[in-house]
Image (tube, rainbow, N blue to C red):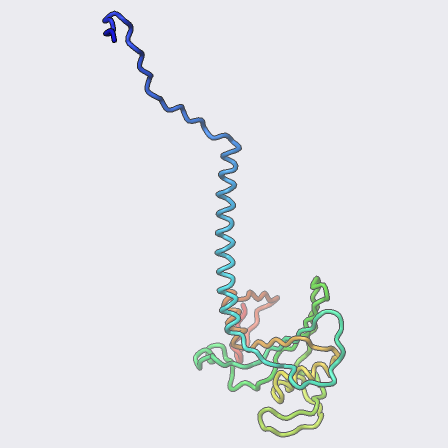
Length: 224
């Protein structure tokens, strides 16, 4: 094979590969990238909120006591449209120490009565709610029952409405309200005085506006 001539042209070397300049991402790609980030952030927020809500509801549900307020009830009014709840607020004060009772002047032992009785009616489509308050000092006929404290049998007799709870608890309260109003109660909700105070504290207090200052030395009420 003949040797190459010193005057023959040398073969060209291929230039080194140079990286092409990167094009800036288009507006469409940037918008898509931010959309993905936004959806990811929203998903995380939803999951965190759901977890926190589940934890909160689980804690609240754990503290809710269950009572069968309709056990053994007979001859009840016929059901109507919607749903009726009986809301009872009692003067029970379990869980409050002596110092708290003195600070708020809660008096001595509770009478185990209902300070508040309300019927809450929810419409069938859940679009409307109506509340009717039953005055605690209204006279009502208590059905025949067994006193839950003394065990004595009582015939039907007239008493103040708030005494139904003291003599027969939630069951007698429901029976008495149904007999008085001819309204069938579907659910029963009870809040004692301790729960009421803790609810107000959890809300940071409740603002009360009065037309003039109110002061009562007996209860310690002082609203300037």
